[in-house]
Structures are given as structure tokens and as C-alpha cells.
Image (cartoon, rainbow, N blue to C red; front, side):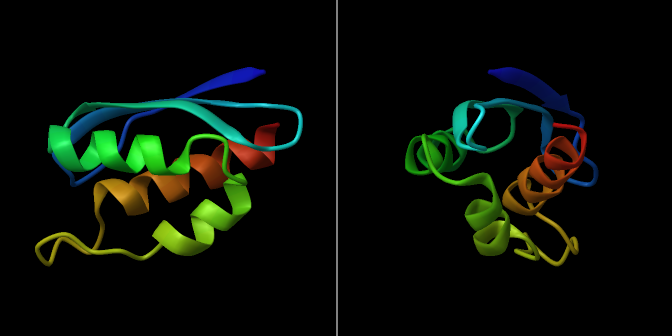
Length: 85
């Protein structure tokens, strides 16, 4: 299992960390900062899910007109991780 860390931009969370297993399933998703209840819920909902499917669901989600969101930033982080995995 490989661990990844990402510094999101233009959102309240300051760091996103997660693991990808050999089958590109997500594990141990943790956000530092941001809206704790919502981000904890996202982490629980995507535990063990296929990384590419999660990108499809979360990419492009907007928070308050910022043009991005913590979910969108997670999708970008996953895409980056998949390229390097």
C-alpha cells in the first residue's frame, strides 16, 4: 500500500493524506482542517472504494463559488497519485 499526501489549494483544508492499495482502492483518507463533520463523512463513505470512481464523483464539485472544494481537491490528489502509482 502506498501513502500519498497533497496540499490542497483555495479550500479550508490544509492537507489531504490517503493510501492506495495495489488494486487502486482508497484507504485511510484524512483531511487536516476544513469542515470536520463533512470531511470525516466523505472519508468513511469512500473507504475501500475504487479511486477512479471516486474521481468521477467528486471532481468538479464547488464550494461557495471557489471553483473547487475539498472533494474536488481530493479528486485532483487521487488523479496525481494514480499517475505516479
